Length: 92
Length: 390
Ligand SMILES: [Zn+2]
Ligand SMILES: [Zn+2]
Image (cartoon, rainbow over all chains, first blue to last red; front, side, top):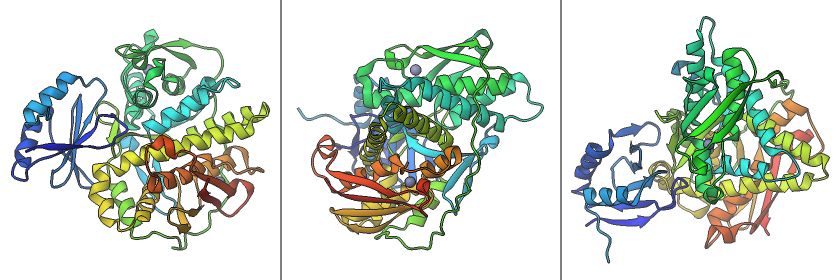
């Protein structure tokens, strides 16, 4: 089960940390790389991230949770597509 | 080109030198807030202050990174590459000779969208000044640059017109300060925070613009801005306000910008992956968050400041050995009668409100009061800030 918690980032008010099952998270990063671009390890703080046009995906080395920061121009459709890819469904 | 911008870090002073200029790390939120503050006072021409300051500083900065034998194409490439490297965004300069420059990524637009999205106004005064200075350095003649389309106003890109002008390029006149900071003697309270580990991590981190010319890190967009720009802009703002009998208003506004910066930027930083990775594991008590923020700001090049006394949630005393505002004021104007470190003063209160406050951020503003009661600018050996509940 994926769940998410509201986080805070100056870049976008709708920022969340997504928590994945420990057995799932490696596969999820694979999905994100396939859809959004290469994974980078930032020296210094041990953060991994993918920078794409509409999203920033960031995590501490272990990869879980994943902070998803929306960027300027990110639409509801972009968010829906992301949620489909990572298997996140909002509870009604 | 990038090797011309290689970071030289002066560990003893906590200074980040790029292209011969001391650069300071601040985020899009603070930069936009500062611009908003200065441009919204109707008593002075704030846009001109920002444009002129950027022109004088970046004419010098771009000249620093040009090399003998660079042809015109290389010199123009340096204009765009430095702007992107510092995190200000992406410029398209191929039509500069025809009088048009465009931009599809902008640090300042991100800041306005984050803080003042309702404004829908052109936001890129800083870029106008940058281009005036940088193009003059690259092409050897002065220009006037004005933005006429802006992403913050709903356009698909920012667009600037570049016109020849007669007035000479503004100069960045200052003289080396005769002030010698007292030694950092290892005193100061750090709680459970390993400040050196944080600073080492920051120095290793490759702060430079991505392909888009932006630096997303710590949950914010960072930029590396020459200290000269902040100093020249704030000094001129305060002087012009003082001439209208509004010194206290200027002081209050710049301090408030610092307080807002601490609350918003530092809140973003404390929710970031970087914080979770390195700093959160060091935290055992609430006050450790405050020490962690102090360590980070030292690594950001703000200077070398440290807590000398702290009663959690009650009072805070900080001394700053070489803050860029104080050193800059002495370089540009010499010493004076009033403390000048408005940003650090506001940040001091903002950190207390953030770390110990409860509830919505907007309800926490003004719950702590800070005062700079001695300043390097008034010939004191260090700057000294006191914070207490309002
Ligand atoms: Zn613009
Ligand atoms: Zn001072």
